[in-house]
Image (cartoon, rainbow, N blue to C red; front, side, top):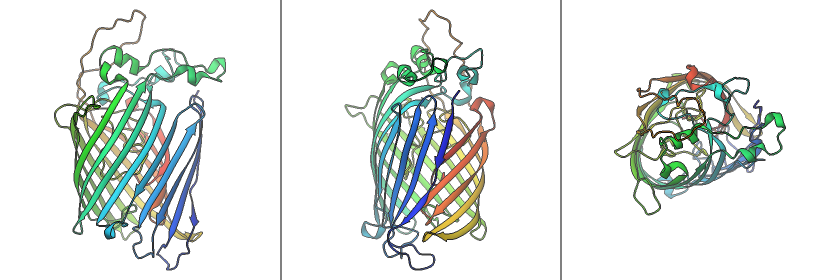
Length: 439
């Protein structure tokens, strides 16, 4: 049985004194310690430290620059180490902006439920120890390491338009879950069986090609245009955001699978009662133009700005809350989120401006461009359950739930969301604790 315990809190540390009632000055820090325990992956401990420089306060809620560092490790080897920098208004009064990231990510058990959404059947009994159909708690997982180095340049063009250009490099290393490592220290009754997984099954049948099975490199050159009328960047209550990005992964010598990707995201924030209640919506689409991307990069969500350690879809805390992470895996997809954000209280604590917001939400998405593959005959003699995939178009996936946000200085946001899937084939529910609004 898998046991998970979470502990997280957020606090602010005053470095320079604040003056005016609703203005924040100087350098401010935010902290988010996290401790979790998982009976398979071990004890995880980590911390996110973020620093905002507000200068003399005249820019607030904008900032001069922002830097953050996140690190967490588990006792059995998983972990994240991310260094993030955003120059904010530091460069020429904000007319130029540099956003950069360096991350090392190791997931011993990243989620994989097959391709093309509803075309791949999810059977929870395969990972349920109490079921007669039980295979392994790791049946829907594989081991993954990611090296990520990104840098984007944003150029302000007038009051509303922003041009961006950047380069993103990703190095993926993948393999089957290391069962021996995860079994170290376990009692006999808790040992994971050394058996096949869906990832192994997909490789054996040629759905995941041998060239892509153990990972590869993506070095993406990207450019885009953003139209932004929001009243604030991280805690908006009115305005809109429209972005369009084209990403090209050229045939460099170290790149195995070149491709071109396009993505469009529209966000809208409609105040329905002063600044206390806002209807926030997001609608996104992305697809590859021509040749499909390698399977390991397909779920990666293209965005003009992102300070999260990993944003993938569809499914999970960053896209469709309550649906299994990466449940809906395809070459192209659409997705959307609707939130009713309500401000419950605003006050000062330890010289920081704090706001508490509550919101119900509805998330949805579906595959619009399926993964193409060819099945090869199985050469394995021992019995296995049938590979339950169908040649059918995807259908709409949905989830609903609610969340609460603790907003500090309109920039550092602690979020707690709970979502429930509306379809049993997409999982049951999910609880997510992190930073920032979903959009």
